[in-house]
Length: 534
Image (cartoon, rainbow, N blue to C red):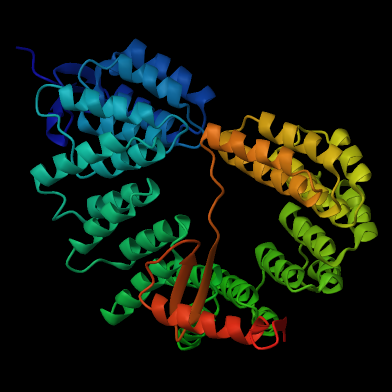
């Protein structure tokens, strides 16, 4: 049976003396000078146009049969920013006996590429390889990343089983982190939480990954609960973890917890000057309704980025201070020497939209490319269409849609449909609804739901109940349902979530009693003795 060639330092044996003495590597003799020269070329390689001639040289010198030598070329192709993954795969096919390093390099590279399923292919090849090549603690984290990126849940669960059998799930911190990340990114938060709870003392990285998973699934309250648990265990959160907690506060409106985190930041010099944290604080105060505190934090930031300006502009837009948002375009260039990007300009357009400044909005979108070097994208046109619709200029909005340099997507037709509902324009609503339903971008069912519900409401408002009934009947036949409303409120630092038709809140009886009292106080009740309304 042919044994696999594996390169180690002990594989080398010297013959002769001087620079031209021979080396025996994996049973093949090479000139020491040739070996040193070829390895030097491989190490200094910076682009594929250099690598290919080096590969040719390796072949002429017989080094392409040497795992160590060829792994240097494969490593560059697969892991370097200047590399070429397809060429790395071709190199792999020429290797008779790939070792663990070669498999791991390809698995790692493909796990983060646009083809993560190929990482799973190389993992399967590795499992079926003979002679002492097995997945190790370097392999599993990247395979799990590939499963998450490919949304391949069954494979990820099988790998979880495999690492449990190998004993790595309970002993290797990197694999534990990868498992939590896999389940979180696949929206399997219960499994992610179970994995997290099995770890006796989870570190800050694991906490942050689970918090991020909760945020991405819209569970801001759960993210904050994990943050509080971490503090109670005495673990010191890093800047990333604190930023995630502030984002959770912003999403849920938990300003009390946000203020507590702000005080925590002030007490730690290593956090107080962090630009990302400062920006997260500005966003938290802004989204929680305290624009004055947001401005105060922003003004006190030692260093601001374009992102920081974007957040404060978004805050001004949210709170109706459109003129201040417009002024920021000049200030960020004069004070901080920063040029507005597409996100900043979208924030200013949004501010104009909320304040009804149509002329200013039109002027900005027309001058964006000339004045700021930013070509308007779909989101800018979507905002402008919404602005025109809010101003009652439906015909102008439709003309703008027809002039767009790209295909209008759901946000554009949705804005026009909403405007039609406000103004009761049935004819144009039917056009917008038809376009919205015909779109094919992966959210077809959701788009149909929006279109049907909006169109039905427009028909009802116009007194065309028969048309509305037809739409509702069509929705039922297609299995569409209106998305249930949801609201969140913070009371004594605790987040309370309410969903339409939900009866799971522990204080629902008291809530209903208070609502009943309010109902009797607000709604006039009939006077039984007089038979009239008070």
